[in-house]
Length: 224
Image 1 (cartoon, rainbow, N blue to C red):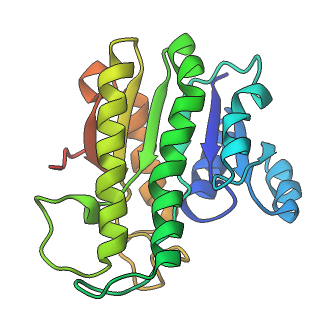
Image 2: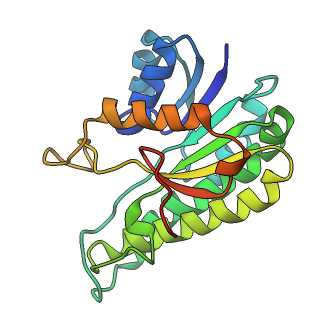
């Protein structure tokens, strides 16, 4: 039975990942921030774990909380969109800090904290990015703070893949598609269950050739 850690599993895409893996018999460790989410995750057959990714001490201590857990797969899903402003409207300092700390610093700290366990188990690591973070595919300036944060996340994942890939870890960044969630809205193209099912198929078949790749939810390789 594989053991998975899903960071940001209380709603949206993260919750759907957790639900599908748990339904298939995997042992799922699901992080959440609000105390009321723990009972709901436990009822779905998961081990809930309180984690605020904006708390550096909590992230640094994550390895201790996972002592003895052989992590076969880690999915870093936590993220925020931030202001809907377009270039060149500057974000406020508070907006910048929230988006960049949530979407960039937190995943970098998580990868650093979990690296020994990823290497020990020769695990797979998937971060939820966005095609909006692709510099080469960019065609407009909407949501430019979110775009900048996902471009930075992509660079962080690529850097991690170079260091961890030689030690047997497969690191991937995913564009989940435009998904009907609180962030994506009701008019989005994809149902969360379908998007997650397709990403799961890609993750399951991933091998060393997938390391350091930016992938669409259906497995198509995207340009950075």
